Length: 552
Image 1: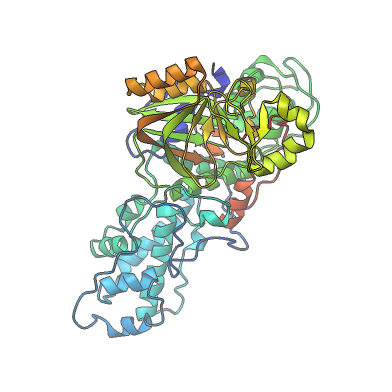
Image 2: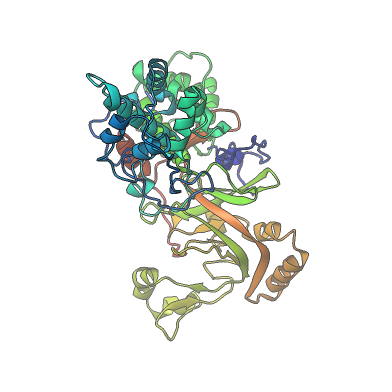
C-alpha cells in the first residue's frame, strides 16, 4: 500500500517533461514531492558549457529534433558582406557563429530594432533562473561586422542555454545518458532574425510543460523572498510537539507564512493547532510523514534558506532543459531524489514508491529500456559487494543467505524467498548493471527516506507491477503467473520495449500547483548550482538511512 504522504505529486513527477497537456494524477497522493538561486552573479562559471563557439559534446542520446551536425547549406555566389566573412575567418568550422553566417552567405543579421529586442530578451533571462550578465554582449565601441558577430554570439549562447541547458551534465554527474534535446539554434536564429520573430522563437526554446513553467514562477517568487531578506533562521534543537511552547515558534510562523503553508499570522510561542495543520502541509511538500511533529527530518528541511530553495529550483530547471522534449507515451520515470516511480500508459500515470541508491552509491541519471521480465531471479552478486559485504562474514553467512561461490569465483544467491532480487527482475539493458527489481525487504518501503540500495531500483509491489506491464499480452502474463506459482526461474518476453528514465528532481510541482522539495542526497544540486553560478546549498542534509541490506 502506498502511504498517503507519498502521493501528493506522483503524476507530475514525470508529466513535467511531456509536451502534451498533463493528465490529472490518479494516485491517492504521491510524495509530494523556492532570492531562488538568487541569481547572484557567480564569481566564476565553473563548468558552464562553452559558448556555441565550441561544439557541445554529445553526451547521452539525443532526441530526433533538428540535427545540429548536418552539413550547413552554403549559398552559392560571392558573400553578401566580404568584411563579415573576413571577420569570421578565424572561427572554428564547428562554431555555430560561423555556421550561422555561412548559411546566410555572410549577410549581416542585426538592425537597430532587432538588436534592441534581443537585449530585452537577454535581460529577461532571470525568468528562466539564468543570469542576464552571462549572456549580455559587450557592445562598447563595437561597430560593423564585430558588433553583428557579438550580438549573434550572445543570441546563440542564450538560445543554446534555453534549448538544452547551459551546463554540460557530464561535468556535474559521473554518468548521464538521458536523451538530450537537440535543436539547430543557428538555423532557427537566422530564420527568426530575418522574419523579425525573435521573441516567439526564444519563447519556444525552453520546455513548455506545466511542470517547467510552474517552476519558473516559483523561482521568481522565492528569489523575491530572498531579495527581501528571506525568512528567519530556524535553529535545530529538541523535537516540537503539538501544543508545546518553544521560542522558535515565531520564526517557524514567519517561515510557514512566507512559503504559503500558513494563510494568516499566528501570535505567540505556542505550537497551536493552526500551525500544526500548516506544518502538515509543509511536511507533505517535503515527502515527510505529515504528523505535525517537528522532529529531526523536518528540522533539516527548516534549515533551508530562501536562497537555498531558489538555488534548488534553478538547478532543477536546468535539468529539465537538458531533456528531449518528446517522450514515449508508454514509459517508466523514476525520480531518484524522491524515490518514486511513475509508469505512464495511455496518458495516465501510475505511481509507487521505490528504493534507490544511497548517498554513497547514487543511482545514475540514465535512459534505457527493457523487453523481458525475469520471474524468480537468482542474484549474481557484483564483485565489489561480495568483497566488502559478503566474504568478510564467512561461509556460514553465505549458507544462511542461500549463496554459493560459482566456478568463476563470483557469488550467486539462488532464486527463492531470500533472493535480494525478490520474485521479479525487470531486465533493463544498460552498461551500468542498473535495473528494476523486487525485494524481500518490503518493510523498507514504509520509510520516508528510501535511499538504501547500491544503485538499482527496488519496486514496491513488484509482482503486481509486472502483471500490469504484461496485461496487454495474455500469453506472456500466463507464463509469468505459472512461473510464480511453480517458483521456477523463467524469462518472459514482453513483446515490446518500455523505456526507463532515471531522473534526479529535488524540486517539482505538486498537483496543487505548489513546489515540492526533496533532500539533495547525492549533492548534485550543490555541484550544478556552482556550475550555473548560483552557488552551492548552504547546508548538507543529514543521512539517517541505516540498513544492513546488501541487495543491489
